[in-house]
Amino acid sequence: METLAFIVIGIIADISLILLVNFIVKSYPKWSGADRRAAELLRAVLTYEQYCQLKRRGYIDIPSSRDQERAYRVPHVPGLVRVIEKGRQTASLCLQPLERVPDADIVVMHKLMIEGDEETYRQTANLIAPQCGGDWDD
Amino acid sequence: MRLLRVISKRGDERLHWNEQDALAGDAEAMAALREAERIFARERARGATAYRVEAGKPVERLEQFDPQASQMILVPRVAGG
Image (cartoon, rainbow over all chains, first blue to last red; front, side, top):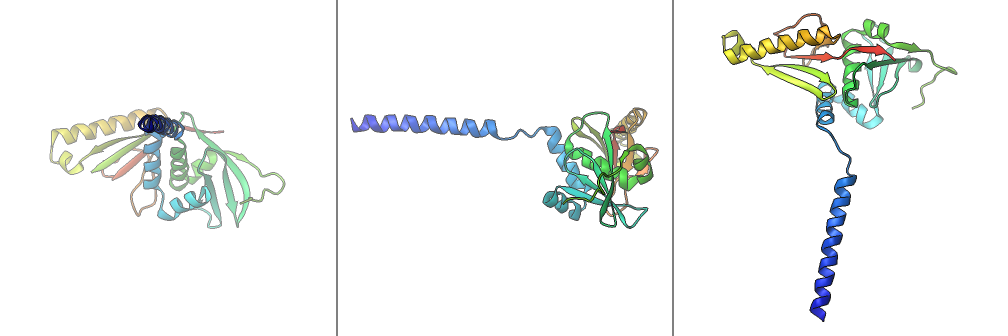
C-alpha cells in the first residue's frame, strides 16, 4: 500500500514538473532571429556610454555635430525623437522606415542618420513643436 | 575582412569579403566583393542610404560603394511620420 502511494505521488510530481516546464517555455517571450541580429547590431554600433544609457534610461542622447547645445533623444522603442537644447525639449521629430524592421534597428537608423547626415535627417523628419512649453519629463 | 550590412525586416543581413584576397585575384573573394557591390547598388536604387561605420571614426554617409570601408550599413528608405 505504501509503495503504491509513493508511485502515485511520483507520477503526480512528474506530471506537475512537465506542466511547469511547458508553462515556462510557452510564456517565455519569443525572440526571433531578426530581433537577435538587430540587438547585436545595436550593441556593435553604440558606444559603451550610449549602450549603458539605453539600458539604464530607455533612450540614448546623440549630440548634434552642428550645435553643441543640441542633442537628439532616441527612445529604445519606436516613437518620437526629442530635440533637447540647453537641457530642455524644444521639439519632437517623427521619422520612420517605410518597411517594418526590428525595434533595435530603428535606434541604429536614427543614430546613423543623425551622426552621418544631420541636415538631411532634420529635413526628412516631421517636426512637431512642443505643447505647453514642452519640458522633457524624465 | 570587410562587411556590408543591410537593415531589413529580417534584422541586418550580412555579407563579408576579404579585401586582400580580392585584390590578389582570389575568385571566391572577388565574387563576394561583386555580390556586395550588386546588393549595395540594388538597395540604393530602392532608396536606401549607406553609411560607413568604423571604430573610432565618425559615421559617414556614402554615395558610392567603398570597398576599402571596414563596415558599411544600408538603412532602408525612411519618411517623416
